[in-house]
Length: 239
Image (cartoon, rainbow, N blue to C red; front, top):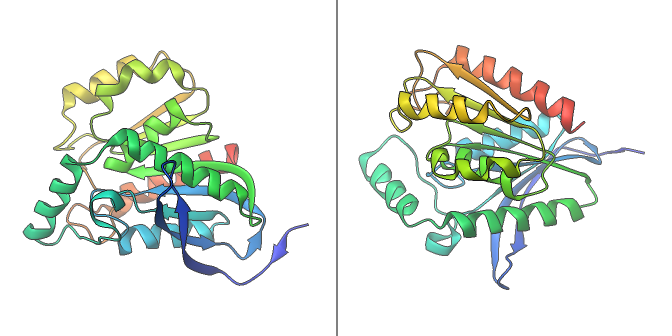
């Protein structure tokens, strides 16, 4: 029987696969047990934007967790898209980021989430930018029930893994994305059309980061449309 409690948030510690630990922001819904959802960060770390996204998913009834994937470089760093210094630091962290270790950390996060009494054991992921790429890799490398990618970067470098997708994957593409060219977006649509578990939504006249609230490229109308599709997707495969 579901347990009613107050919406709660906390920072927890997750053991990595090499014996070290890293932190994660956890927000639980008012009624548990509930499905789990991993929110995968952009290049700006686990900042207020990511925590707010987790809060919104917890309000919608999911056990939401945001792991710190930059902990090997600089633990608990928080950046924004509002200053040039933060952009430079974010790109530096991104360039030095090991995607394979990042996926290891996400799988460790999934394991920890599954073990929480508040979680039903069904887990999905949703990622943005760098996190959008990692959500794609979660679809190819993990047992997550479903995964959603918002404007994922460099997915084309791992299209050879698409044959490993065993659970539903949704991609949201921004047609004016300065980091994912029209040619690459066309390549993604063509090559991933061979996989019935993959759904792609493409949005015209919006840029990379269209769902980053208060970001320079935020677009409310497109965000609401993408979010409605994402929520319907999670309700279908997690609830």
